[in-house]
Length: 359
Ligand SMILES: Cc1cc2nc3c(=O)[nH]c(=O)nc-3n(C[C@H](O)[C@H](O)[C@H](O)COP(=O)(O)OP(=O)(O)OC[C@H]3O[C@@H](n4cnc5c(N)ncnc54)[C@H](O)[C@@H]3O)c2cc1C
Image (cartoon, rainbow, N blue to C red):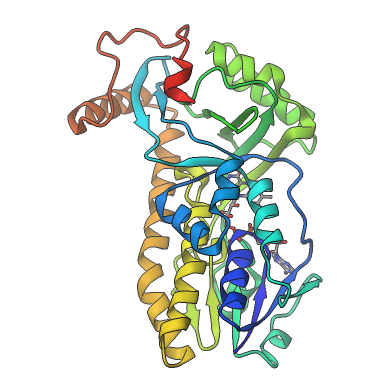
């Protein structure tokens, strides 16, 4: 079979490795084929790690990952609300993951560096067109009219520093959030604030410091070390729900279900999509049957993560009634028995996380 894949991000690279490994003729098209310059972290959980194992790259990814055991959720008033177990998740820099997947591409994969403006020629000579072209997917917009991504009025800033993380946490302020996680070397941080873009990363960072600074020491320490050159600034866009198959076209990853970053599942679902597509093609008797099997297996999980991540975005970014939210989250955690609120309700502000436990 001849497969043409548009997009060499996590989903396009992993499906190219799997499909070429099964003997299909694969053309992979991307306008950049670039390793990201800022290595912000992606969390990868069990199912995604098993996909990496099948692709033959898990050990390499693990060697470049941090494996925290848990992190803390902090409320708007600085109280420790809950301890979140990492559940075997690992944190790898997106740049490392893309580099490892790129290096694992079989030589038979024909790489084509170009920007595609019209998908119609991509059907010619191909049995299957794979849209792995991200949140603003041209393949989705061309085949699924009205499926343009929706912008949320939130600005995301992410970055890395060379220092070890002062703690592993996500702080939900009133109308903003700030997360601190480890990298194998250094710290990964991310923040969401109400939409505010200046066009200059230096000024965007200054705005972030003004919004979230002076509230918690660990956040101030990370922001003091943050530099514009190792900071990314972007908006949040999510795509409306679609059935990710149509005729000879299939959507993977963000093209199929672009989600908010809040549950950290964009890369996980992308890897699982790629794995499910190659498995469906391997076991079905026709492309039609394979695409039906892929849609049956991946539509609900992809849309569920999309909906869940949007709900989490709104919950984390609540600006009014955040004390009610924090009380409910702490109580829920205690009832579930998996999350453990600090019993005395003391501010977490000046606590230092026990490093061994958290990193
Ligand atoms: C710059 C960037 C930084 C990110 N950082 C994080 C992060 O820190 N943490 C996190 O959880 N998630 C992050 N994500 C999101 C996460 O990587 C994705 O959710 C997940 O990896 C799914 O990837 P994908 O392969 O479906 O899409 P993408 O990673 O967006 O890849 C799509 C690819 O398609 C190519 N493409 C698109 N349109 C065209 C066209 N018309 N012609 C040619 N090529 C085209 C793009 O160049 C790109 O390489 C980031 C995404 C991007 C793009």
